[in-house]
Length: 322
Image 1 (spheres, helix red, strand yellow):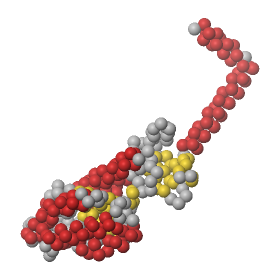
Image 2 (image 1 turned 60 degrees about the vertical axis):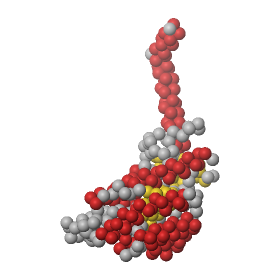
Image 3 (image 1 turned 90 degrees about the vertical axis):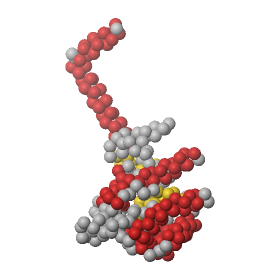
Image 4 (image 1 turned 135 degrees about the horizontal axis):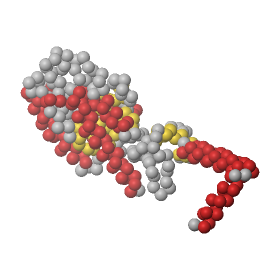
């Protein structure tokens, strides 16, 4: 206490003299400039990282930019290029660090393409909602495929959704698509068009063959196989309705048999979709209950989203265990 009082009296004496004021101002200026220099240095350090022996640029969009050596305060997502790495840093998100973007191929027919009705064939379907969800979480992903369509708010429009195509037609071209895009993850929803004139046995056999074809060409790809939406019984022939229903019941068994063989195949259950999630005949511009409506596509996106996250988290756990 006595020492603090002496220090206070000493400061008052110095401040009351002209010489003391000059010394104080010089000292204060020095501290201010030093603090600014340190802040600039720290800012430069925050906005620059090293990655794979080359330079990287850190683009901060808020939140802490601090990385502790013991544990990461925040994980970042980035796109790896030939020389540089561009990083977006946000608060409260985790992503794959040290890896290129996860390439996702949406694969199927008009439901993958995004047909809602006769006057709406460019909605992007589930892809729009799914992409926005993945981007909101800053996940390092990229859609791939030879097709490109969708609304303005769908930034990545690439896909392999082919309106009117059957399972066999997809199988006839899929090898070229896979060879070009080299996806890490495939979202396969196919079979709706097959219900028109193919038997259930043919549908099951052709889907089994398609799965084997994909996994043989890309053994490490994560293949997510979804059930198809129901078909409206009041608007389509009953035989199509029943084929879709029984086909959906068969898909989990097909997938499980491939899982037992050690293949990276996953069943994605879309059977929560109901007739209320389909287009109807009340409006002439709609396609009479074959495609999902906006609500149905949103449901599909939510299920795909959960399935994709599950695969990504599994990859992270495997990487952490190595």
